[in-house]
Image 1 (cartoon, rainbow, N blue to C red):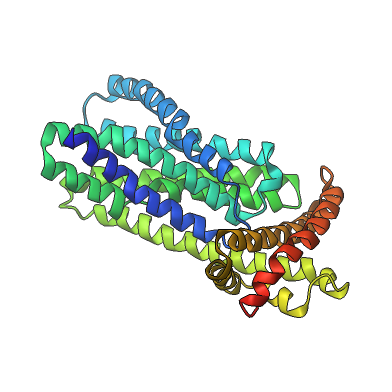
Image 2: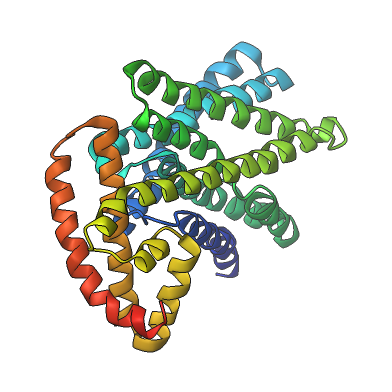
Amino acid sequence: MLIPLIAVSGALVPTLFYVAFVWWLDRYEKEPVWLLSLSFLWGAIPAAIVSVFTELFFDASIATMAGGSIVADLASVSVSAPIVEESAKGIALIGLVLLFRHEFDDVLDGIVYGAMIGFGFAFSENLFAYSLPILTEEGLSAGLTNIFLRTVVFGFNHAFWTGITGAAVGYARLAPDWGRRLLAPVGGWILAVFLHGLHNAGATLASRTLCLSLGVSLGVHWGGLLLLLAVAYYAWRRESRWIERGLVDEVRHGILSAEEFSLLSSAGQRQQARWRAWSLGGRTAYRAVGRYYQCATELAFKKQQLRSFGNEGGTLEEIGRLQQALVESRDLARPWLRLSSI
């Protein structure tokens, strides 16, 4: 009973922390929880199961051709595994942008959805392929070491790789021509496969290189994560500009005051005001202010979509609905914002 508990806790606790961090990254317009949950479950169940059986098939073929040599091991972990796993995870991103394109606004959304899929996949892989078997067969010390390496040292790996594909899909969502819309996701997937394979090669050769090759894996993981965070920061700046540009008409027409406009354009001010509203009015106030933020942000983003793609699937009608929703949600939130000195 103790071993399964340690394995589940070791896989779950870091995953919850990482999911919360990525949720925080999406500062202005939070993605629907149900869609994020669906993304996580795709990575944890269908993508993981498809990858296992497909990799078994490829590994058998590789073993037949190359035997049990190091070449076969490298081909398995550095070629077939990255191709299979990034394909199984990446296909969900294509489905998301096709079926829920109104929820898929930009590069940051792609990173968020890609990371959620990656966290789901990593959770299942860490639990069933590594933690449980190693704890059972090799003991507590080996099991805890493995958990630490896979969930802390390399905890963002799958989220990073699929986040690259997601960022590329998000870029394609905003691309003005079909050439870039088609090529960007392919390029993102190729980069994700390459970095996945490079990491796996470094880890596989660690015992043969006195752990020097592990430095490659660490560089890919942490360097890539910093790069992805830099992209997310750039996306924040762009989303802030979308909000400023999208809500200026509401200020001009007297729907929003200059103070409200300033608040809505700043992610930091938003969160401070929302927590102060919570301290004054509890969950009701917190949710009312959050709904107001959501309506304002969705309105600004819909106006950006209108500028980029025209009246795609009834965007004009959606803008009209959101303008009315903004007025209603603002009236509900204003008392709490006044009380909190905003």
